[in-house]
Image (cartoon, rainbow, N blue to C red; front, side, top):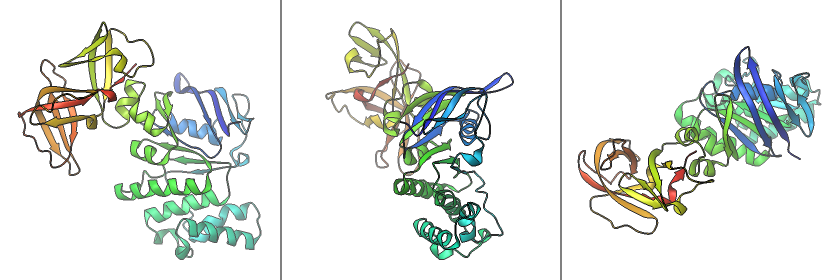
Length: 356
């Protein structure tokens, strides 16, 4: 039996549909991210799971029991869930230890047990030496750890996180992604994580539900989601990609400057005559001379249209003969090509994914 299940959940505000026919099942100890742009319905979904609003259609189940439906909704305080907001909501007049132990005190645990559990969780989040400090004396990352410790120490049935790293700078966000994943691996609390940051979702999640305009576009493991996107929105939202249009003719599909067999394309159904594929920039390689085609690879002459050096790699835009749409190619820092220079590009056709 799944731990948390959303069945055909919808939420409307007047004539506006914020969430529509949402279906998702989380297993015990799983971390699933709701990922999508602003306004896609991910926070509304999280608030329905938390009990702050009821769905206008569908049900939400916890351990097999319905906790939310259009007719009734279990109050948030009776759901055995913890939620971390963007603002952390740390009490400024309480020390780190008092903040972390607040939920245990409300649950009327004995003082010795409260102190023992607080000390234990503070060591886990590496804040043991700061237990007597106040929030104003902490960095943003330390405050985030306090919020995490306070949510975990009560041993919730489900942990909910609403863009918890959005207030941190880029370097700290990257550090905290791994910290959240480490804590999840240690405690295995069933977790729903809301974010609009693709890298954040990729690092922290067991699975990712990509949302667009209130609907789920695809639910998959990070690697599968990135490598085999099922829709154009998912392919374009998760990382960078190239879309190439082609036409099917017999056993071949012809693109600008190269062709591949029908059987070599990753497609879940029959191919239409007009084919759209996605290929990531790192699956295309550039050379100054023809490298020769190998198994599963096609080589095409092209021209460098523009380039940008971003430190860790070059971001090239190249055009193929007879095509107006440039392809983005990621190259290593030492692979330097000039604008308007003729080049050869090698396309790994095994990485072409047909987009519905």
